[in-house]
Picture (cartoon, rainbow, N blue to C red):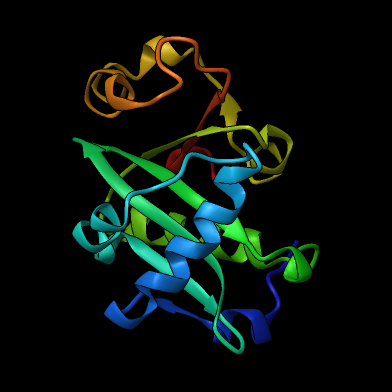
Length: 160
């Protein structure tokens, strides 16, 4: 599916002034149990990881977090409910995957409750045990650990 050029025009790197809106959007979905919330300090620490979709404010967000040699993670994907179904989430993920390609990162994973969405973008299921650096760095601090029910999926640049 081709990404709408009007959507692409509204995607840009996150800026300092976006942090409060990004936080509010992520917290909205975290309260619904659809993603893990992020501390506002973490958003400032990782500002450069984020891209946003802006239309009258931040209506979508996604981040590419570099984890290890040749491995990154798609995190914090959220699109405001009234903007869902337009291809914004797909466009945000594709921007992050393109950045991974530019950085010569060949593998990108996600831990998600929305596995069908990522499968459409050529992510394939993997065992979480294939992600040791992820498990021992971030997951230990997660409130869901060790009973995580998110699915792990992996995208490989050479297959796309």
